[in-house]
Length: 222
Length: 358
Image (cartoon, rainbow over the protein chains, first blue to last red):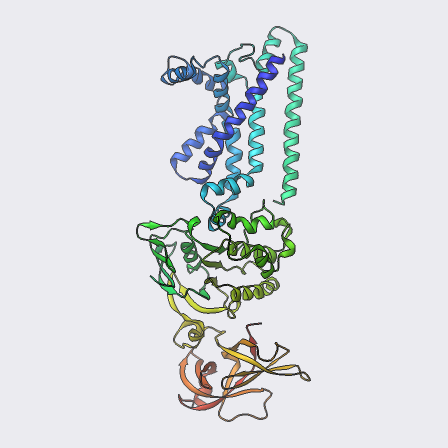
């Protein structure tokens, strides 16, 4: 079981980290641009919210598999097919949790408005400089919310993992799969332990996020 | 290329086009004046590079900021910009807000943090966060922040309009000190001329995106064909020297070229120069000097020009002494009854002199 816990935490951490790197520029672009292309991209980013995870997993399985051009490319890059590996799982999780990172970030970026950017520009800060010294510090709430939501959401994912990761101990067997396993083999006590822990963990994380946000809001007077 | 600021912009706005071609002095305060929505803020934003004008030619002293085929991005223009709202960075304390521009200009500005904080009276606020400041304090810090970025020109977009009356009164003295201390030009956008009468040297009047008049403020006030003389609060500015103070009645006497003017209260030590504003509505004309009037300020003047200001009133431009000119507004009927003509020597009775420089 420890294997599954560590693997899950590793997956969630790595996914959150990658999502920060991908999500920040993507959310910034969505917040700052207009037009049909932006709307289409925004729609794509939101798709994982409504699609059954199995649909996503199915297409990922196909596109990551050795028979597709993309899968072929990735296979040669990673030295083997990504399906049923931890790396494949990370890619799936990143796509699956993308809206949970991008949505809060985009809202925060939009709420900042253009004024602070203009002020920074009249104070000789280049756009990149402004982004790091003004936009990101002002987006603390969004960054925190996005990271926690992505992390917690990745912990709980099941469908995508099952489709592209399978159930390989130490490689792709995460907690949600482990619960499924225990239930199938009628080991209720073990299933209870994990399910209960995850329930408590999610509750505590989301509650502390809410409290933290309220506190920092009070602190900054925003 | 020379000293001076060349501004030419042509760009469409929502309801009309901004079409401006002016050059203004490279020192002192130039007021950009006009009704709300006439394009003055956009003009200021074009200068700062925050609004990209379609056709433009902009140079500040020897530096070209914009011309056909060349656009210096906003962050490379050495402007100090004070917005209508203070717009302090909420995540930085006062000191970090003040030094934000210095940090990015890679050059220490001519003014130090200490100097600026003293000039604006914000030394005691340096460690505070913006949300712990009053509106007036915030705007003073925003002004200080703009100054510390080592600007070649200071652009102020109605910096007092978001503040209540008493806060305005609190800030104006700081602005006046600032204007005396700074050598860089200031462009000050406002729709309230009273804010800047004490500082303004040059004025540009803007209406529906076009310049309707421009020139030195003193001359513009006296130009009876220009829009300023038609305003209800038209008047003239005089430089006056404090010459006496009557402690018994608490009255200060000013000497101006052409006579003396008395105002209530202690204004300043004898010998200091002040700028005084004579409202045209508060000046009446008589053929003979009244000696039984409560009005104490009676000056001999010569009529230079009479121009109708409205259906009922006309403006009269008067020569006072050798070099001064003042403006009186009288009814057309009075003009006809007294048969006033250009060249007549009359007496101006002045009720109400306001000091504009304290």
